Length: 217
Image (cartoon, rainbow, N blue to C red; front, side, top):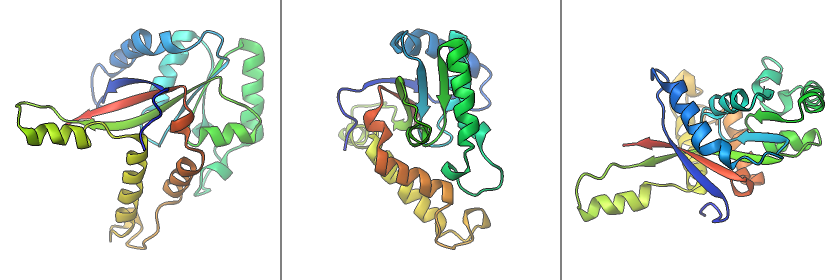
């Protein structure tokens, strides 16, 4: 299932963690492409998506540019809980958001399972941004096989990426490596939560904006 056609999409080429100009690239993307799409009246701007996709880096940049408070859900987690949603300090998060909204008028929130978290504390996003990875292929010739590869694998939908994530997690769970559970067959708790959350609430279908972090091969 493809992303609904009514959702605006913009792309940012993947940035390696050791890139010298990583911050400059993000700031240029935010100021030139992202900020013009965020309504000035949006009070709660949110960034959702799987873990590690780049939500916090972009959210922090938007926060600096707009000079408004930024809250990352990871900062409100109880330690050593081996889960995400039930480990959130909901009262602390709600009070911090309420105080910032009253003081500054606008805030930014980023984190996994964000739609579910906000619903729990009776908040709703004013402008929701969903981040996702996608892969595209450099085409160096006009071979039909390359064009077909680009069509089939070059720009995956959110649904395809979720299915792929589920498959990878399942294969990793069968690995004998202790890092993946020693072949227990169990998908890590956070991964299970994220996959279930996406299947149930489908944040990629209800977002106001999709940002595709593009990995080129």
